[in-house]
Length: 323
Image (tube, rainbow, N blue to C red):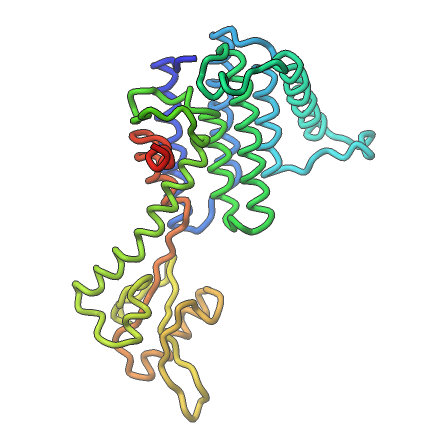
């Protein structure tokens, strides 16, 4: 199945807009409201349904979209309890219908495409309907993997997981990303787009540390062993110029009242709050400290937003390693 140019343009524009708004909110307030993801899931679903329907991909593929929505809904709602179906309200009834349609799509598809030749599937030689259904099933498994990673605290940020699952809903497979926007090479196997996005974001995240370190070296802020320890993830700022915001003060006053001492910590010893922030500044000033190490909070969602660029241009980073 070839992606529709108009729908692809709309889809890509929307995911960039969605992720930009979310990343900006997470960077400034360290939170993204659930309503944000719910609203953007609506056009993502509409576009996906319209594109699959316009390609006459069959009822199984259309109904499987409902399974993806069902998995996405777990981020916000509890799975309806069948033991209390008499007490269900409109929310539980709606969710149950979504679950039933999704399960039906998976069952119908598993029967209809049970004789799939998986070698031909990987090579892209099966029918468009077959490839699309198995890709949708892979998207569902990808969503469930992200959810499991969130529940297991492997990915601690709820907004990060919701973003990755929403990206999966926008792009269930590479068939929904224009071919000319990435270099596919000769490899036929690629991990799902949202997983590739996660890898690109992780690469950005790992590159941030040496960039911050080199910046501190260039500014002359690395002159002692403690500075070397701190320069990878924080920057020096005048104490008088530190303002409350999405950051941690890592230079603290420790010890006893009789023998206070200034220490630099890799992680803050206390949770961030306006009261604790003001107390830290006051203690540093009382000790005559002029500069302190401050770590700016960089939510992973920000890296996910910037990772959209290499995702669209280069596709799966693992594809280059497997050449």
